[in-house]
Image 1 (cartoon, rainbow, N blue to C red):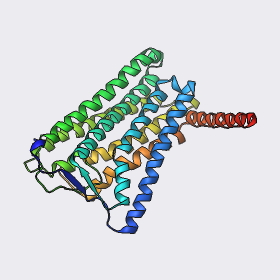
Image 2: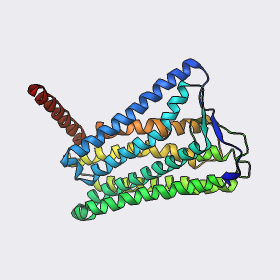
Image 3: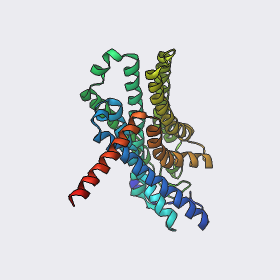
Image 4: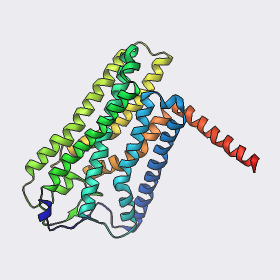
Length: 315
């Protein structure tokens, strides 16, 4: 049990000790984190400020996905930025467990929300006559709540796997943040069964959701075949945005969690890509490929300018 562990803190080894390299990484990671916060906040504000976007389930789910991306990016990136700026690369045992819990809570919820978004597009395109009744707001909220509950269940299962292990030393993690594959390798007991259970949990969750998404969008593309007019192109643009985000999220996860017994720099890069790059790129993908979002952002910008102009005239 974790209560019998001698380890009180872990040390991250995932950073270069070269000062110029650390400063470069600090700038890049900080820029990505600022992009995560500003980009996702912009999507949430735009959807909430635009009644025409808040009502459709697609944009309601997109706003929730942006909230999850912001939370997921905030699990480990601030600590990563601080470590790159200082020589202290340690994290307390409790802090490490908290990182694992929230990483899998938000990560699992994100995968399920993306699957729900694919289901929403499937119903809208393949069953348009029943779409309004099927994806009404109360049911959409229930489905979204189920996604969050599924993420919590997934994360709680991961925590049970980790907390049952004793840690006697060493305490050096070859990573940038705490995650199950790296932490369980430090346990002073046989972890083969734990790693198999981890694959059955994280690996299969990623794989099953990814396959469901591919099948859903495959059916959508087959339905749209031969109908590439204005509406068809619009739907294809939306679906391509979703598929791009799906690839950015699921491919690194499958790479890390389906092969937990390996340890390499490629695993480390895949983990950083998932934690830092993907949440920063998602807002760009959805805004640049979505004409309605771009138009809504222009209207929001004009409203802000008008509001400042009115305030200036009053002064």
